[in-house]
Image 1 (cartoon, one colour):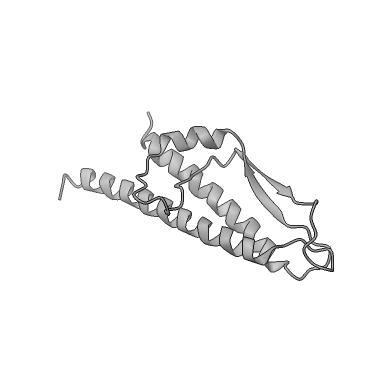
Image 2: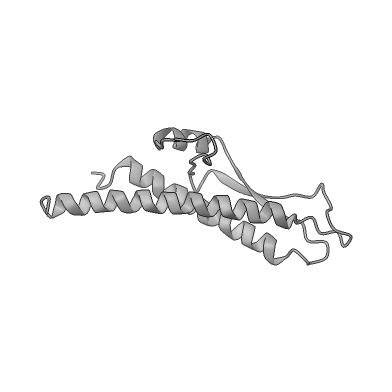
Length: 130
């Protein structure tokens, strides 16, 4: 018997992935001045697309960021070896990293809010609607 719906499971996986992405971005930012450091990124496999089809979000404006989630087993961390942005061999683009961090934070907050709503619904049902 599955106590929680598939939506809760999908949200949990998406939150896990967002957390992993945040760690990679934070590590890149922390090493922005480290000589010969090569930036890393999180790449999502095709399972991400399957998970996202399960989650529904309404986009009311074309400027809104796409809603996303993930499966913690469907990503890998890849080092970007093919670029150099700084004279010391470092390839961290701080503007790009800060943009990715902001997008990831918005996504994470949306996922947490949705998961919280699901648990509040369960709490209401358990209390008998009170």
